[in-house]
Image (tube, rainbow, N blue to C red):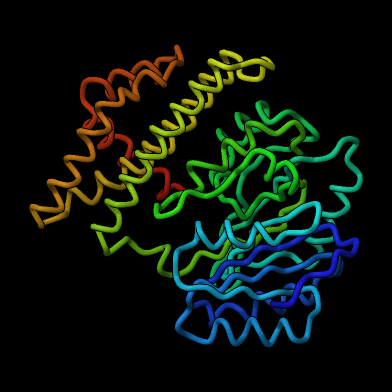
Length: 353
């Protein structure tokens, strides 16, 4: 396998793909046309059965800053972990094969990195959602942060930016990422839910871009309702798994809070963030339950809700406003009524937009 030279490039894109032949030409053209070419590419082919590997190899032959790794299909988490091992630049970023960047993205990213007073651990990229035809659907709300602690960044981002858990909207300092032994857990959906908040939380220096540089493509499949309800249940169960693991982890960090990073306020907000993420998945399950005819699937969803009840998530809704008190009591005493009301409100809000 070709090795990337240890030249003075600053950034690496780690791209993992499975059967993405229809998107790769756009992605590679997008990278070729970046105004600043100071980057490497590590492309991981995850056992594709279409022409993904061939297209990537053609690009690699023409561009010395690219290596291609091909392996059997083991999933996105394993592919990202493998790709990260080959990074040789000071910073790296994950890039999904069906998304793309603005032409000046690399230039702005590197300028941000080099102009920071202290080494950035994380640079958060602002995002816009676009259609497959590259029409802007929504500019994602975010917050402007300039060289702040991760404890400030996670609570600021988590309550404003609905796409803050996407691994692809962060530029990581390689040494920071590796020294904390960050990795994606193999074999589960929503692996980002279990990792990304901690990468932000533990950072000493986080900055965001003012510009919206990352184009998150909404495929027609992602817009339509999930047909495979069994798969949806597995995703919900994995979300609950990561919720439980993350609550245990933040409890442990709070217990061993030697540097005073995890204050009482940070601790409460972090737990609430994970609760909000779990509630979003609970609402999806509630919607499916209303129309599902298969008794086996309905029973699996009911079992999921029973497992959620055991976690007593209402305790993480600690606000004293009336809406918080109502939410807390409904989650405690009548979870299904709360979900019914929450789904109805989401529908109303969508119609207003």
